[in-house]
Length: 285
Image: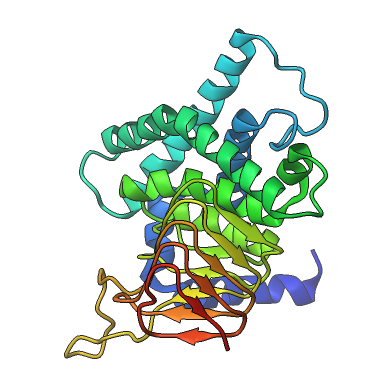
């Protein structure tokens, strides 16, 4: 090793340890999985839902038998259970292994319904975009569809109280697609984000069936109330509700936990809304 490097290593290592503080020690003690490990497990679950289209293997799928599918599910579930257990340990939760097994079991039980819901999402994209040539094209290439696939997996884990991991999954989709969906958001079937870049959907947002969003739409919070000590109040309803059959065009911003966009409403491009909109209404700039 070069002298100039060797002479700095001990001092630099100690300085970085001090800068990291106790949080780094807590992360190491819990043996939290790395971001790449979580993403790899996520991709395995996506591959189970759409074999040959998504997943770490890629390419033509040769897993046609029930035994092969069973093996893939077991592998992904085992990986995720270990990761979720570590996340619960980091959060100092009681019985982390039991809670991890319960959460992963809930996801496994939900996979058939997730797949059925995603089929409605595929159809919504194909029927809603005149440029779509096939449903396979939607599955393989549409960023909005990829974002909702990840969300439907992450949302199940979020509802089971799993710390950290659902957000890592959603931010992975965000980084790949430019679409930011918090795993806490509740989204009905037949959901389509056209183009997608810049869409933001907040944690407490509820979206009904057959809703279509265009690029740049924000379903966000109007304000952030604070406690007496200046910290943000957590757990409040902050984001709007969007009922069935709504269309929101590019660049529109809809804010507030008390805001409801009524069934069948159409929100025009670049509109700023902080009030409820009745069913069937058209709001234009």
